[in-house]
Image (tube, rainbow, N blue to C red):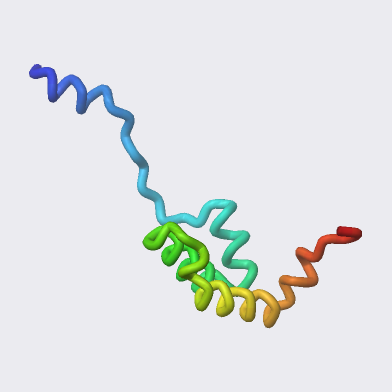
Length: 77
């Protein structure tokens, strides 16, 4: 067995499952998962939140439309 084969055999196997994890379930429950994805994709590509203002506004509107602002409102802040 070559060194490359040994390394490949010792490497942990990545399991690719399509089941939503806890984070996905939380995002899907907000009703704004598509808007969240577009916002995070924008930040990932640009590395600057200021460039993603349009995506942030769309996400904020969706968040309010689905009543999530009441659910996550800070009390006494």
